[in-house]
Image 1 (cartoon, rainbow, N blue to C red):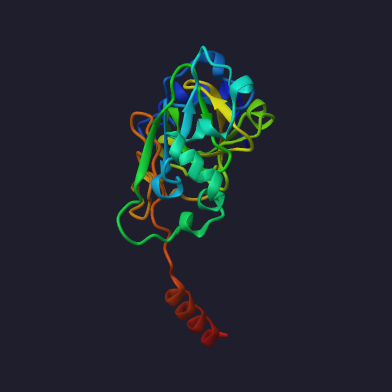
Image 2 (cartoon, rainbow, N blue to C red):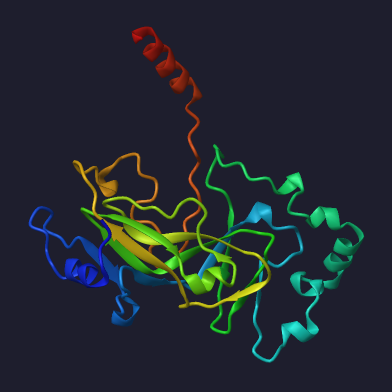
Length: 253
């Protein structure tokens, strides 16, 4: 059962006697961002991208200059740090093609955390590249207890083809932190710090609690302090354990 806007605010202002804390914390909280059954979330001023997905000589994004009309003077040259890299791109476009396996992502990366590039979003805006992925973050810090939180994009963002998450829009009871967005755009698109880019919903659940912030297997508890996106942790490969469990279960049949 999904909470209404007034119920979200009520849960924020009440102390749950079981936990000694509010079921919902949203900081900062703006009353005008409370909707019928959700709360609007804002984009922080920093993005990250994986360094090994950016072709050498290319900009990760283009800061908007208030005195420059990119529609009138726009061309691919704007994406390159200097003219030499642009001409190299003209001669060998395949070296900059995101389908090139030099830009492959390994989600089960087993060494240290993948190197990232920090990208500041100026108040005048930042043009995102439709051929790369970005990690963004909510401006808001949230805590959720005794409820199931999940985030989704705003309809206006969707109608501008801004994707804010792929499969990771669901949170957990006990999640505390800033939400990380997995962002991409369909065409060059400007984003701004503080823009309403998503919304958070809360639902009740049935069963005993297993809070995320006390689970030793949780990867992202208290993530994103200060509105910084958090890169992916290595995904586990448990083939041997799966095969062993399957064999044991087959014996019991």
